[in-house]
Length: 228
Ligand SMILES: Cc1cc2nc3c(=O)[nH]c(=O)nc-3n(C[C@H](O)[C@H](O)[C@H](O)COP(=O)(O)O)c2cc1C
Image (cartoon, rainbow, N blue to C red):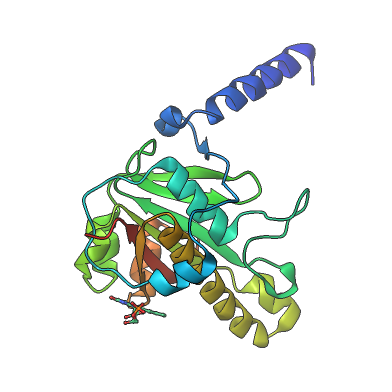
C-alpha cells in the first residue's frame, strides 16, 4: 500500500467516524450510533411486571431515539464491562439472535428497516420506506402492527447454537427468544410504552419483507408504542 492509499484510508476512517455519530445522516451512511443507555429507571422491576399488558391500540405519537436505544440495550445490549456478554442469557454465550427494527415513526430515524449491532450499540440502515404495512400483512394482517410506530423483529441463526448443542440447541434458541422478548416488554413499560408480542406470522413472508439473510429465521415480532 502506497502513501496515497494510506492517506485515503485514514481520511475515510475519520470522515466515517464523524458521520456515524449523527443520526441525521441515516440515508447517506450505513450505521447510526445510538444514545447511551441509562442504567437507572423510574419504575421497579416489580412495577413493570405488574403493569405489563399486551396492547393493540397505539397512539400516532413518535418514539424518541433514546427510547429505542434503551429497548435495544435491554434486548441484546452488552452489559459486561469490557466484555461481550449481553442483557439476556444465552446458552454457551453463543448469541444466536439478531434484532431488526421496522421503523415507521421514530425521531431521528427515517422510515425503514434497521439491524442492531450490540457490540457498537449502533443500528445499520437496511431498507428505506414504510415496512410496517407489509410486515402487518405478513403477520396475518394484524392491523395494530401497521399502526405501531415501531416493530422489533427477533431472528435467529440456529447453527450458532446447534453447532455445539446439536438438536437440543433448537430448544435453547427458542428459550432465548423468550428472555429477549420479556426484556423488551418490561423495558418498554418502564419507559411508559406498551408492546404486543406477535407470534402469528408467516415466516417466509416476514423474511421476504425484511430481506433477511437466508440463514436467519424470524421468530418473534413485537409492536411497540404509546398505548391509546
Ligand atoms: C408467543 C406469543 C405469541 C403471541 N402472538 C400474538 C399475536 O400474534 N397477536 C396478538 O394479538 N397477541 C399475541 N400474543 C399476546 C397474547 O395474546 C397475550 O400475551 C395474552 O392474551 C395474555 O395477555 P397479556 O400479554 O396482556 O398478559 C402472543 C403472546 C405470546 C407469548
